[in-house]
Amino acid sequence: MTALLLAIATFFSDVTHMFTSYLDRPIIMGPIVGLIMGDLQTGCIIGASLELFYAGSVPVGAYCPPDSLVGGVLGTAFAISLASTSEMALTFSLPIALFSQMVVNALLSAVSLVVRLADKFALEGNGRGVSSVLFICGGLRSLLKAVIVYFAFALGSDRAMLLLDKIPEVITQGMTVAGGLLPALGIAMLIKIMMNEKVVPYYFLGYLLAAYLGVPVLGIALLGIILIITKFDFKTLFSEKGTTQFAVEEVADDDF
Image 1 (cartoon, rainbow, N blue to C red):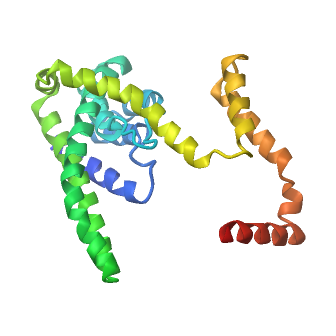
Image 2 (image 1 turned 90 degrees about the horizontal axis):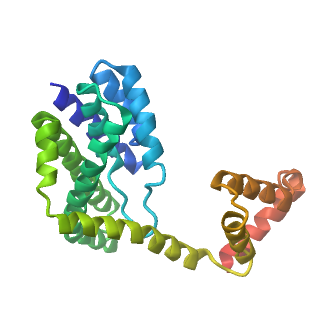
Image 3 (image 1 turned 180 degrees about the vertical axis):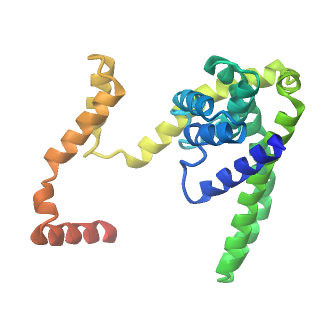
């Protein structure tokens, strides 16, 4: 029964990913798993600990991070069932998250052939057909994650880890190397799109602060907020005159 409830929670949490990217995070799912398993406090603690690990695991460009949803749910569930620590929860979570993302990527590769139907419906002006294809594909992904959670928890932590250990080492090492390279590739792709003569100085300013002055990321982010506030006069911007000027500039950019 617990495995079924965890699978249902995983399914509905992943479905919300179509509308928001935060309800499927470990810090949200940890307490939910704790409620299902009758240990809310441990669920909150482990969920927050896993969130710290997965905080930087976000899709950037071509990079597909480990599946924090499946890894977070099963890591928390196994840790609660075995009365383990947060460190042990991460030990359970990471290989499961990597395995889940690998399986989901295989599904999405196969589903990409079906997505062509959406292109056909779009050419025909059939908006309902496009929406149906997209929701079906997203639903299949959510269902696959729920199935992984159900069978992994039903088999138990020992059998689940034994199954993961049977994956050839060359595959796991390749995934680790690719996972280290793809974030840099994704960020480079985004920089190529956004970079222009106006933002180049701020890019190098952030690099100099981090590389030579040792300013942490939070400090650089706060400095960026200060620069935004000082660069734009918000009092004028939100006044009647300032709003009009901003709207004209925005239209000019759109026309460009």
